[in-house]
Length: 159
Ligand SMILES: Cc1cc2nc3c(=O)[nH]c(=O)nc-3n(C[C@H](O)[C@H](O)[C@H](O)COP(=O)(O)OP(=O)(O)OC[C@H]3O[C@@H](n4cnc5c(N)ncnc54)[C@H](O)[C@@H]3O)c2cc1C
Image 1 (cartoon, protein in one colour):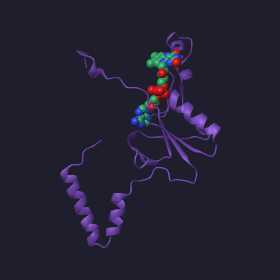
Image 2: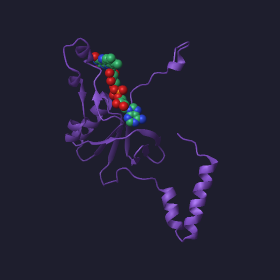
Image 3: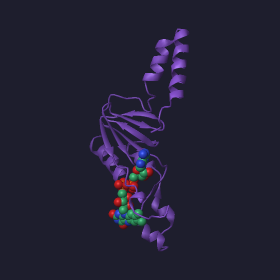
Image 4: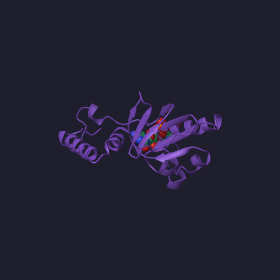
């Protein structure tokens, strides 16, 4: 997460002071205290799933199937899904690459809300997910972001 610099704080303070001087103190306070909402809440309970790989996509579809009244939101940073399972068939020239790559149309057809954004952090106490596009409130959160390699943990790994 980006660090707040002293200069930024001073700038924000100056902006608030200016807004206050113009009689807009309430407005300025609201601007700084309320994060932009990506998807407004409805009355439906909401499950947010982070990660649109095999894991997250399957959970999102199954939850919607089992509980249609629940709003299921799938957050994935990429527009396309590429399957590693079955990729040997592509490597061996048996199937074309398109056979392994899908967009999320069928997931949306199943009633899942697809949000293409990157998740930046999670505020568990407020049940909020911060994404590159704004905040998402949730009742239940599923984490399926896959794994990442820690190359730095392997001694003498060339970078
Ligand atoms: C070459 C290869 C072949 C394989 N073959 C097989 C096989 O034959 N059979 C088998 O069972 N398994 C196979 N596997 C393993 C299988 O691919 C993984 O177990 C599986 O893909 C894991 O799925 P996942 O949903 O947990 O994670 P992933 O598929 O890694 O999905 C995680 C998703 O989360 C998204 N994400 C991560 N961070 C964020 C963020 N901050 N914000 C938004 N989105 C985010 C990523 O973009 C990604 O789409 C293979 C793997 C490889 C590499």
